Image (cartoon, rainbow, N blue to C red):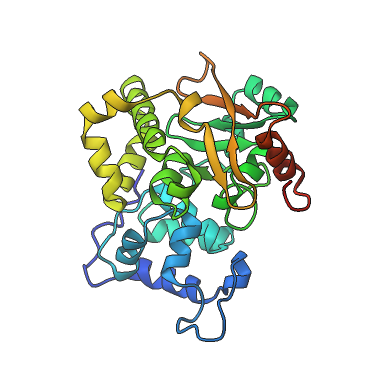
Length: 300
C-alpha cells in the first residue's frame, strides 16, 4: 500500500537527500568493508558499496539518489535501511519518503517459514539448509548455509539483517552481485532454473505482490534479468531443477565445492521451498564444507 506521497514536485528530492546523508555518515569499517587506503574521495560509503551490500543495482541506486527514480519497492527500501544501519525511526522515515507504509513487511522473515521446515533446518547439522519464499527471499538459513553463502553477506548473516541468515534474495544475488558469476560454477543453469521457478510461482500465485515487486525491480536494475525474463523460449529450453542449478559453487575461501541437493515443498505454503545441500562424505568437497561450517583454519 502506497501512502500517497507520489504527487510531489519533480524538484523535491527528499528521498535522495536522505539516502545521501545516511550514506555519508557510515564508514567502510562500519559495514565490515576494507577502508581501501587514505585516498578515498567520498565521505562515507560509495554508491557502489551500498549497491553491493544491499543487492540493489548501482545504476538504480544512483537514480534513487538523483531523484530520477521515485518508485522503489518495499524490498529495496528494506534492504537499504538494513545496509545504512537505520534505527526504527529512521527506517520509518525512509519508507514514508518513498511513499510506502513502513509496516508492509513483517519484522522477521522466519515467522513466514513452515514449522516443519524450521524443524528440519534446525536438525540439519551436516548439511546447508535454507528456506526460500516464492520470490526467492531467504527466509531462514542454518549456520552451514550461512557459511556457504558468506560471499554474499553484508555485516553478518546472509544479507546481514538477522542472525538466522534471513534478509537476502537468491535471484537478486544471481543477477546483481559482482561475485555471482564466479561463485555459481554453472551460472547459466542457475539463471534458467531461478527464472523458470519464478515464472511458475507467478502463475500459481497471481496475487503475490512480492513476486511482482521483484520482477519490476530487477527489470529496472539488470539488463541480464530483463533479457532472460523476456526470452521465455530460451528459459523453457534450458531450465533445470533447483537441485541441479546450484550443485557446484566456488567459494573464495574454500575453492570448488560439489553438493547434492534435495528440494522439499509443503502444500500448506505454496511456492515455499526448503533446500538441503551436502557434499559426498570423504570427498574434497566434504573437507572444504566442514571447514566452512566450522569457520576454522585454512581449508585442507
